[in-house]
Length: 261
Image 1: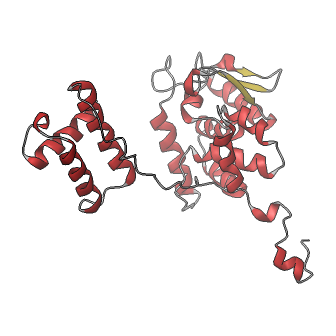
Image 2: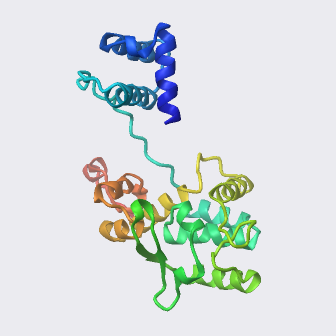
Image 3: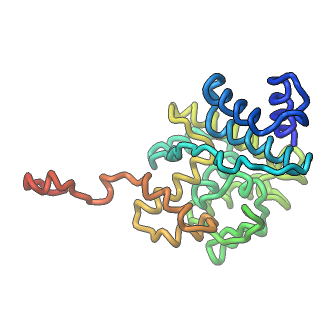
């Protein structure tokens, strides 16, 4: 709401008129100005378009003949992925037991940071070696992996802290650790490990999926572990695999009689 109001306000100030007095030609001119003069990104221009469309169609109940001005296509960027040695370095740089347990759990189970924050003691199903995720993205429940190494550190952590009901409580012992705190923990450990990649704590989730794929795990299995609604979302990790692990021989090397070791 705040962003939409700001977009309409800037549009109005640009022409120094009430937006009620402005029309489709003005909207076209303004969007062109945002692209060519202000050099705004595709995402920013699309947000302005959406804000103006909402204002004119919902607030003023006007028609909208600008659908042919389809939203700009944003360039798709592959997510950053850490190598296994980089993940290990980050974990080793994390000396606080609670913080190490959080980062290990996120990477080991492929969790979103909010999912890790919301974990409760009862969500660790050690008998089945699973972690139960309640109300993940789009309010969906799912089960994901509980590795033996992850279970070992969680048991060590529980013996030291005895947390409840949340697995990772925050300053308020009855509440969970904040997402911002987990993000800060990751950044501090990444800096200590000397890693320069533009990685965030969410990169651990991307790395989990990519490393599973490189190890030969089926793409549909990875989709279920991550909680993706569509397999097309999971296929992004096909582009992130290290080609040297796939035993793929370039056709040029085949012509030259070179084989992979």
